[in-house]
Every structure is written in C-alpha cells, then in structure tokens.
Length: 599
Image (cartoon, rainbow, N blue to C red; front, side, top):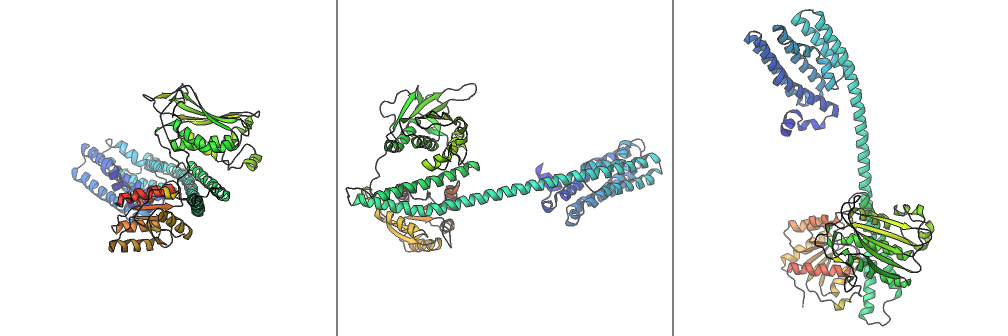
C-alpha cells in the first residue's frame, strides 16, 4: 500500500515543493483517481441503466477519462507541480461536467451525483486549502455547464452559486488556518534546529575540552609515574619525592572533575547507559572501602561495613556505576566528617505495593556536620552545595550527587538523604536487584566476604613485569606523549618506531610490510594533523593491513569507543594513559598477532 501511495500519489519529485503546493498536487491525483475509478464508472452505469444510448454514454466517458488522466499526468510534471490549483480546478470542471451531463441524460437515476457536482466548490474547499477565487471560478463554470445541460433552471444554478460563495469563505478560512499551522511548524522546526545546533556545539565543546585537558594530563601523570617508579627502581629508602605525589594526586583530581562534567553532559543528553549483568555488591563495597580507607585514616575516622539482615551475594546491576555512586557518597562522608566515622550499612528491601521488585539499600551513615532540611533537595542540583562556604573549605564542583542520583535512577532506584543541623547524615542508595531466585544470601561478614576485587596493593615497578618483545609503531603528534609512550613500551622490552601523523604511519606500515618486517602492533592516536587516526586506520584496512591497532584518544565522550572500532581499530584506550592498562592491552594484541611475549 505504501509503495502504491508513493508511486501514484506522492512521488519523490514532490519533495522540493512547498508544503501547500505539495498538498494540492496530491489533491489533484487523489481527485483524479476518485473520478476515474468510482464517480465516472458509477455515472456510466446509471446512464446505461436509464436507457441512454451506449455510444453517447461511452463517448462521454472516454473523453472525460482521457482529460482527467491528462491532468493526473501533468500533476507529476514540473509544470503541473508549479500550478496545482489550476490543474485541480480544470480537473473538477471536467469531472463535474461529465456528471452533470450524465445526470441530464438520465433524469432521476443520477440525482445524487448531480447534486454532488453542484456542491463541489464547497466540498473541495473543505479538503484543499486553495485560493478563494478558484472556488468562485469552479462555481461559475458549474453554473455554465448546468445552464447548457438543463436550461436556466433556477434551483440548481442558485445552489451552485451559493456553494461557490460558501466555498470561497471556507477556502479563505482553511488557507488562513493552514498558514498559521505552517508558521507554527516552521517556528517549531527552527527551534528544533537551533536546539540541535546548540546540542552539537555543546558536544563538540565538551569533546574539545576533554581532548585539550586530557592530552597534557597524559604527559603530566605519565612522567610523574615514571619519576615515582624511578625511585622504586633505584631502591631509594625514602621513597618518591612528596612533591611528585602531590602532582599525581592533583592531576587525578583534575581528571575526576573532567569525567564528572562529561558524565553530566551524557546524562543531560540521555546518552548515559548502564549495564544489567550479574555482579557482587559486597565485593563492590569492599573495593570502595579499600580505596577510601587510607583517606579516612588520614583524618583518624573509622570506616566499617555492617549488614542489616541477609543481603544477596549477587544482583543484576552495573558494578562500575555502583562503585562510582558509593565512591562519591563515602568520599563526601569522609570530606564532611571531622570526628567519629562512617558506616556502610546494607539491607535488602523486599517488594511492596508501591515498589515492584526488591532493592538493595546501601546506607552511608556519617557523624559529620549534617544538613539543614531546606538543603536536602538543593544538594542534588548540579553545581550546588549546601553552603558556599563549604565549597571554599572542602572544595568540589557540586556534581557528584547529581550524577550519583541520575545513575541510581538508571539502575532502577534512587538516592535519598536524612539529616539535621544537629549533625550526622544518612545517604541511602537503593538499587534494583533484579530476580533473586536461587541467589545465595549472606547474613554475616565473616571470612573473605569483603575481600576486594582488586586488592589495594602498591603497583609493581616495571622491572617486575614480564618482558615483552616485538616491534611497535607509535603514531602520535604530541612530542611529550610520544616520548612518554615510547619510554613505557621500551622499558617493557619492545622496539619502538615513531610517526608524527597518520600519513607517515601509513607509509611506514606499508614499507615494513613490503620489506617483510611488519610491525606487531600499531598504537594510533586518533586526533592528528594531516591525516587523523581514523583516516589512517581506514586506509590501512583498505590496503589489506591486518596488524592490530590500539586507538588512543583524549576524547572520552559516549560513542568514541564504537567510532574507533568502526574505523578498524582492535582496542581503545582513553587518555590520560593508565600504564598498566596500556601494557595489558599491548600484550593482548601482540599475542593476537602471534608475537608471544618472552617467557
């Protein structure tokens, strides 16, 4: 049905027409089909039934059908599309004239069709917003046809004249309404386009901001780690310079702010997604405690975990986002607590009439400064804190709770708070558990229930890592990051070649392949001058190069990973570079290419 509509009524050539002309052009075609397929055959049948000579009846049909089909064909041409009202008027005059002459030849049998033809100016005005003068022209033409067919009978002629006047008023009203609707639609389209343009500009700004901040952070944090590891390699008893640890701590703080801004942008754009897979909430809690306990000990605060009843060992959720929520809530509790401590209290909330499905409630209970009741809602607003003086004293952007609540809601729950000016707060993150059939329930923290997934151990020095072997091409335009990445890879035992842009990377890769000394891996920065990493990767894949490519990008917006993989990369790593993650991916991709690490 859709194909028939597009073929006969709405051909692709109409797309360039203004809305009103497009509607009228389609009206010409619809009216033509109504006449040739229904009204004219019905008029012929009634005429033949009334005894009208066959030759006369068929002759009238052939002439009228041919004329109407000609109007139909013209409506699909450029000339017809420019004058749809003229075509529609001509078509109606021809069709209605045939009906009136047929009714005159068979009086009584075709009375309904006769009167329908007389009222045509008013009927058409109800469906097609053509100009009022065309309704009057059609009425005048019908009056002339009526006079020729039936003489100067006053009733039919008065009827068609009245229909013409009524049709003219209806056409004018219809056209005004159509104009208002069209203006409103144009305004809505303009507003939508402006919103899309603003959203695109915002996304581009955030992507550029991420790139411009992450790129120097890669060098800052990377070389700071190099200097810290140098102290470990040389066996200095005093450990790394405290200034280096300060640089590293503040660099990671700046990175956390950038990540928060990007997360907020994804949330506002509705592009932040979460997983729904089996995960162990107690392990997530253990990871958070292991991560933040040193910060609590610095302030001489206790940080412990308690169960209120039995809790499931496994739920369906997103462990990464759950970890992010708890790090924020516990981090805030430590920040705003000077004495006492923080307790993480877990409780399973069964399904109720108000809530479908069970939830796991994780309460973060602190003995801190507390909140005034009027600030309990305000703290969940972006960039807001309970008191401006707190920002000066404790720092923070005011994004953490906004993001955490949005994540909790994406995970089927919410975050609520109970507090008072007297001190102490309870932030509850209640998250959907999914089905718990057959899930083991834990009612005690004995044994290794709270063993972290990743123990908080000092990172081993590079000399303790199993060495790698192979040739790696690093395509990176930034000299600082180029030096950092090549240093990390060379310390791991790899032979490193460098390329300053995508074009040079392609040339070196193809030359090495022709010489029989192919690279085992290409580390490709995706934002480079002359030829980007995306273009270089696509070009290499077109040339048949199957060497694994690890994408490096300082952009961390939603979809960047998919964009890199779609270009032909095998893996993706965002800047600043995590050295352990980089070497792990390098090892994995080298093994994939057949360059097994030395053992």
